[in-house]
Image (cartoon, rainbow, N blue to C red; front, side, top):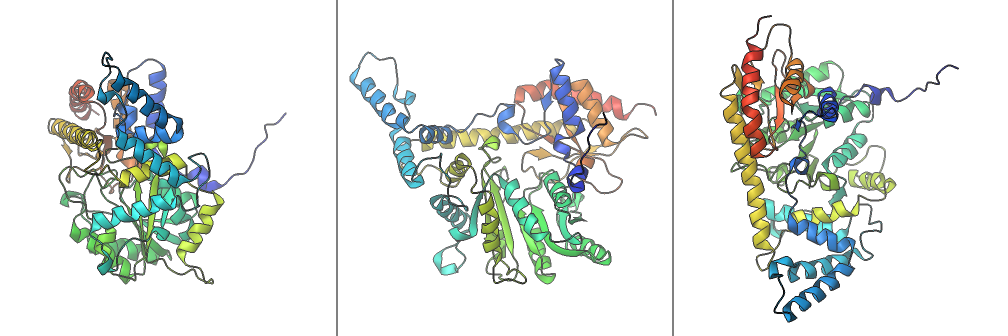
Length: 481
């Protein structure tokens, strides 16, 4: 009997996603066979041992099982009445956390098991707006304050990006400008929705800065191909490069978008991962400019929180355009779109609330929270420094830009004839167990080779594997033929 076949969306069939592509798939098979593998292919901190932030998990656990709030207080009372107990004050959830959990529970109305508004809990969106205003220095007098009604809670930043691109891509010739190298979410989503990818190239040797010349060159080339360019995507800090954009680069993008009537998608999920650098949001740089639509994304997956699996984030809209042939504006259409999915998951919404509302000075949980935050960010920078130092011992390896995000994107200037960065990364995996992603999976300037490594493994793991990598590299690139 012949095997039944079915026609499917060819855009989905053709799209690629390198961070879970052939190299990570091979790594999984090697692990199943008993080989020790270090997965540095994706920014998934807790999978590589990063501990969750206690404050977040305490609140979520109480909201998921509210009876624990009263039980915790009863247990603490018994402890205080028993002078012979081996327990200590630190063994109990602080009263401030219990009180906050009660407050949040009341705001949810029916707990976390019920649907929310399609945009997400109103109180969370208000907290996000307050966060944006604090971050960017927006007060009532400025007229720039964030509007909770222009904020959507999403299942991670990826969900927000896909929502916007789904609406903007109306026909095959609709173009989306993306930085090369780029996070494959964007190339895959553009392909899935049937649009046209328009590549622009940051200046690698100038710390991955964006120049007006590079933007105009990419735009003009697209126009010559009859592409209707509608939006430019900017990732800051960068993924995969880790680059932190300076004010000049951001202002160039805004001026460019204004001149060509483009919207901007600002992917800012790594804004906490700057390790002493300066983060400038596109909302702040945009200021009172009213002619550039801006879609800003943030997420609970990165920063120091690393809550990837809980899928939470937000999308903020500024200067929403009107919809052609309709009296609706873009926010109205986003709401219609969001309503089909009913709402983002509620645990992700709550962790988003906690992300933008850290414990106040008077909260007894604050000291532990700050200590955990500083430890995570400090460890990330130390590990990045270890990896960068290893590159200096590798023949023909260069890395550009300040350290940001969770990645390094070294350029491999020396490879054996006839080999690619894919070949290199696959051989590196087979020999050392280190799983990275080839630069071609993110796109790169013609004639160059790179790889991306997430600097998330423990220092102990890095101390063990980096010497093996150095030895492998110098032997691989200097072999004959």
